[in-house]
Image (tube, rainbow, N blue to C red; front, side, top):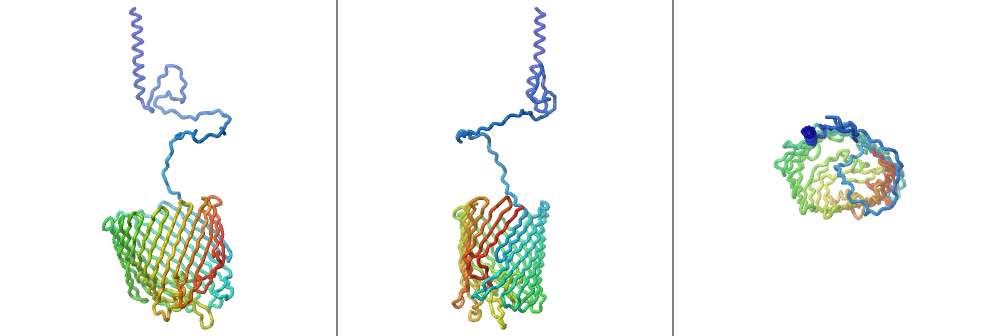
Length: 545
């Protein structure tokens, strides 16, 4: 009997440590585990019985089977509503492709070439290269049935822009080149003209908002040559333009600053005088959720040529209420040099007899109201008064030998204006914009210079609709109207350009485009005496890469 008790007691003692070991094993981690095998066992994951070793993962083997698809229709209500949790990714704006090329051609020899590429050399270095070329070569109808004019005008522009970030300061180095080739009206003193321009730019600006003040500074070397002139042949202009600005915060909402611009002009012509012009602009700025106030002034000095001293206000007050409504008032002014670059924008066909003084905006005072009453809707209503000294104007004359010429001269002008702008955007499907401004012009000494207002715009109106029926198609329809000032009962023909355009993306990054201008086939002039094209079209292809 005792022998049997000893046997059962031994079995109990053997079973006790096994139970304790099983409980301790439950607290082991997945990295440190011990598996006791009491009988033959084939685990699902191989090598799981090894101590202190992670299991080796092997891909499962699957026997090849014929795939059978269930093609029966099922109502959407039978699909479980929550089969899998939705994955919410982090929103990120898609990066634009760095390269762009556009090639187009049309009647009247219309040419449209554009190319641009942005090199991202590193996180701190950017290099942008750009090339533009546009123009035309065709026969145009001269005003008053004066016959045909075999006109051509080509403009080429190339540029390089490099930016390097030093962490707290950005360095910018840029260079540009421009070339304009075109011809004058038949019978003019010269048959052709060529403008050549180039510039070099060096600039720095602070990017760290931690210091109590911010700054920017730049210097520019601008070269310009006009080859054929009525009285000033092969005139060359060299400008050294220096700009600087420093601003600092005196509180979270208040800032003070001062900006400086200095222009040193040099001419290779005895009839033009070199000069230096300085513009000083101190200001105070207050900005919070409701108010934005700028109080400043422009103090302009000139040396060697031009009026020696000008002063004008630089004041703007804007009040925002109900989050999306703004009332604003301004009284501004400042000097605009009549350098060769600005002369080309006023009229490339304009000729000089004398060196023009700078145009000075003595006052531009306005009151306005901006609002966005509904999503996608924005409008602006405004009116004011503008006073310009030495305003650059177009004057058409006929020379002693019967040669037509378009002169650029200056006079003191002023106008009262009123305008409106409205814009509506609906998702990515529709965009509508319209604007218009009316001006009532007057000029000093009207008895002798009233004719200078003949080509001044009295009403400028523009509207455009962009419609995108599908993601790959864009259709645009627009109209531009410029009515001229009436002088002694006569008005120049108004610009009346109704245009239609569109684009279609053939493949990702490859699109075709087309535009038709002057659909009404109107006779009008952008520059006095020089006709614009009739119905003309332009089409081509663009690439993004």
